[in-house]
Image (cartoon, rainbow, N blue to C red; front, side):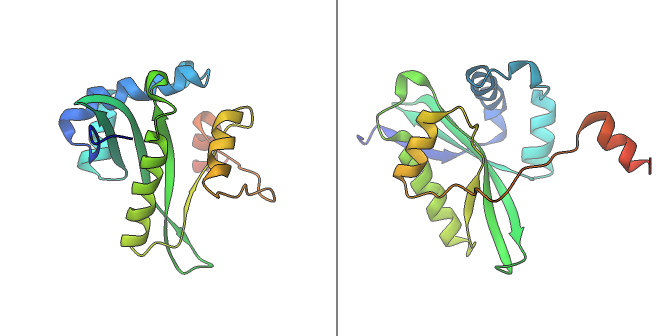
Length: 161
């Protein structure tokens, strides 16, 4: 990887780019129909409420990808961790070490903040990503199943039904 690649924290002016990259990732995953985020929503949650952070990767000033992450908490470790929600590198920039650079930066942030771990989910069919994560030394969490409440089901539970 050469010195024309840079990672930086996103600012509010990056919201249109972040939304574009989210849509590109969703399209790659076959989930574009699930994207309901808007620029206004991202501005509120990323820059007003500050509930997540975004790293933008650029090569020669051109955006090549992003990583969106936030803090979680491990009761067993007794300290925060970092959860990586999205890591996306545009197809034409893959294989150049940029994904590894994102992970290196995320690992640095995790260590600098005193967090106990860095974790993420990966779709079962995404073998190229799985192979990449394994090459970094990541371990799959085989004993855990992800559960989720959303939409009407979440609303009904909140109402006590």
